[in-house]
Length: 522
Image (tube, rainbow, N blue to C red; front, side, top):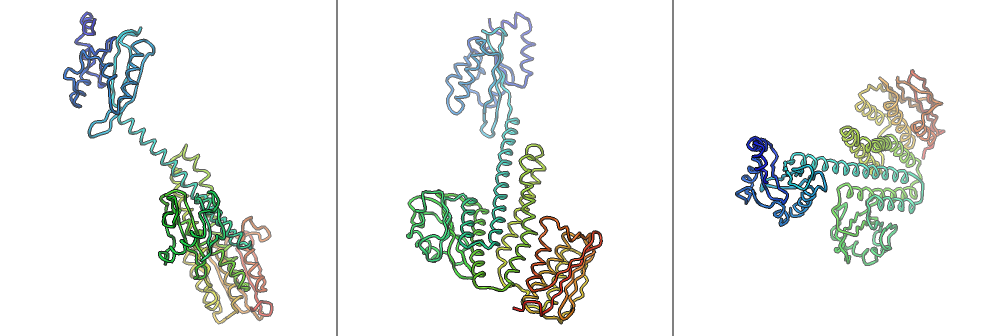
């Protein structure tokens, strides 16, 4: 007996059809053979709007047979649905559902099909409901895309953290007294690890063999004498004024496609060699990777330049300059990297529970790493002759006070004898001590006023820097504070006496007394 007969016997056919037509889901009812015996208004409306070939909306047609014959992109979903419908008809499962795409010509759409037995005991027909779930699916897709984006951002943050930490470690090596070959080997190894290239090598200008090479390929066959010759030819032709050449391996005579970066290295204005970075496959280089290659080339230039300075210059002023760079590294880059490491360590947990805070943390991490990166590059390039050798000390101290006052917003009282002129070594040391003392006061003492004085004293000069800040106990120096140690080293280098007077809550006075007979005049 058909559904209509059943309904007629019950005397409720018009009422139940009205109920079916009121449902928003598209309903179709099959008998035990899979033949359509009833539909609702939503089903018929869908057919009209989407060009359904059945003018009778499928009434009396075998629904399962139609699904068995389905072709095209949705044939697999149709066969899976047919299996599920038959299992419900046979009583093998209580219900069946399937989510499937059903796009219109002008939009992407998704539906879910629910199949339930018409008779609970099984062996009879089924009720099939199709309901649109496009909004939910698009929301799920967007959420998944957001998760993937967050994962990518975490990877980028971790990579930037590794790069910043690696560059910071390299600066520590550069400021050491290790042999040049050891320093170059460390830098090339660092570049190989951070860049993920097959081969990273340092080639000396005109040479046919690399000075340093790190490779994850089969030996260093890619660095043959012939290849080195082609590199020099390419640089001579296209390298003038270029920081980095980005080439295809084929341009250098390679037998396989790949990507090569060549960064010229100059030391004291002269060509020293090139940094050679070789990738086994063609790839699009990220801007931060290109910048890293450039920075490594600068580090190599700095390492070689430092070696030249150690060989040619015996002046203690050079050692003082290197100590100043170490102090600036401690005060700026190290603090930024430490903060960046803390944020990066916390990001994975924040992404799980507080995504908004994590995004803010990621922005702060980006700012810190970029700041550290910029500071590192500034230090790497800070090798030129110092301006302190060109002006009288009084003029230099006046400019220093103006600069510190402008940066901090604090007034600085000056009591400086501009007529005093000193030998270069003494002038450099006293200027750097004043710079260190003022910067330390700004960073740690929380003063409201500063004083700087330079006056004749006992046949020499006395420099004093005074603040009205929180003070400290001079015999208990916090771990990691290098400022006083650096100032003492500078004073000792010219035979001067450094006196530090401070008391908690009473400010600090740092005084340096220098007498020509005691100081080194060379």
